[in-house]
Image (tube, rainbow, N blue to C red):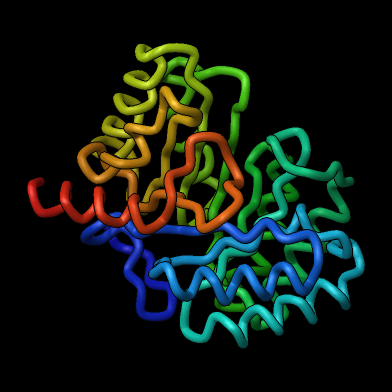
Length: 253
């Protein structure tokens, strides 16, 4: 498996990278959060733009991306509009979703864009093609806040993302019990060992799933999400504590 290189960061090689989200509602909150994240030692910053009150004004969204890029310096920036159907803050029409992601990819201010794989194959391909034409990497994603699918279904979804041409494959699921956590970890190991030719990101959410955020390296997950302030998903660990645990496990495995 070849790592995905974003700026000078090799995703999928070595210790799992720590991604910290920004969930500000105003440009001022977003920029302040970016400044705070720089101080906690994140490897990747995710701008959860579905929280942003002016996200559908594309000029304002691009200006905010520009300001955020200036604050983050060389830190890789992942642009994510999480739709309400996958746990995000806002509903959006597919055409608007595609246009927003394409505009951000074309802006030159973001390094990666997230595209939800169940948006539809044509929409996903459109975002990926535009991003790649602009030298921007793509993270295909799927989030199930209600359950943990069977191991075979998790692997199937990740394989679908790979077939569509995304650079990084991501799935997050909600466990009902510890067996669901084990299902996610087993699916991660199978995908990593038998199918993936690019980095994968997996996580089991909530308190029951927090183990998956800490020991992803053992099973093959390349990135884990921590928080610096408000979390963007249930079960996220504070970024500094997350790094301490991840580095400890990396030294053992």
